[in-house]
Length: 493
Image (cartoon, rainbow, N blue to C red; front, side, top):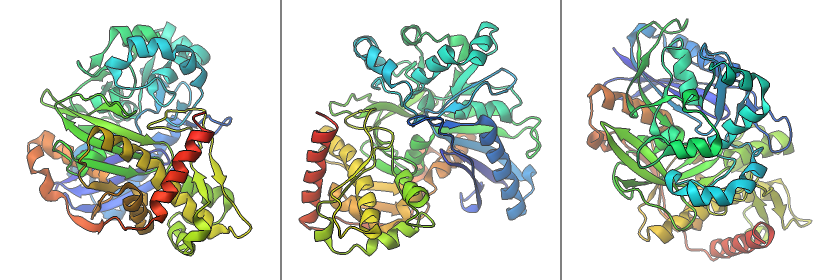
């Protein structure tokens, strides 16, 4: 048999999937978590050595558990946390910790330059000037990290997102490449041309020499070389940022197809086809993928915190031992009257769509003497669903007739959360049998690159596991109104 490897390098860990190259059946899966680094409030970092070790360990254990010879691997796909930014030498030596997409250290920089950016740059990037994106992180590294400054002076600097770093390591430095779904999140690439833009580079003061080559999403990015856990010569054929990979893995290949991924954050992405649409409601214009010179665009809504809020209950409040236990605990809060005044605002790292308030902080509001852990757990899930619903509301204004929302990611397994999402958003929710959709998407991309399937054939691989339909209950619109009023008072005034 021949196999595909899909590497999903996420915010809290690296997941590797082994898939049958003919049927796309998942044969084995392994996830390796790694540490999160919080130097100060609002700052989030990763050690690139930790990330690379998690890739090594994940693949090592995957092969061991599946009892598969790595020589049977015919291609590798990579999906990654997108805006997280790396600095390393041309030999692959990390120069500093990666700055994670959640990090807010460049908020003041964004505030100072926002007016000029909106005037000269926004049209090119489709993105607001926000600490979320990579360009400001690169600028910060060049300004504040001596090792990065020295490498720049010596022309020995690589600045990139995680996908590029992994390919660089897997190919022993032979490839320094990315693709548009990742490059479009840097604020340095022109959406219309899919190239690094001279004006944007000048605005942020970043040299093109430090940036990777931008290639199509499904093509050969390089071959493995001198990696102890893989034989030489395996082609890397598919790369997508995690949210675009989920869109692809959900077979959202037609205009109007929509998916929501629940990971550390939650992200809603709509396929807009070959038309670059600019939202009037705070959504992001971005690139879904490029193939054989054809670009498919997307609109995106971003909620920075989803699964991370549940992790906070687990790690900080100790109200649950494992994240999946939140559903059982939340189900104990069956008295909705007790829940009516209670709001969990999961804004630990600011608010994304549609408000883009990087200074926002999390809060729990409306606690009474009767509030217990079950009510907090349910409010947490409601906060995730309501936060994402703000993006759904924006989509409805731009696209009044939305399709059903296909869901994926770890928290999509939570039936209560999915029903809440259907209720708050008044949209049908469809959960597939495979919810590891990000990794599944780049595995599909490998088959597209190999010519084994066409993009039009992808829907035949998508299988429904469960459908959630909106329930009619006055509690949900009333809670949404309370949510909207609270955001207006606390975060927008």
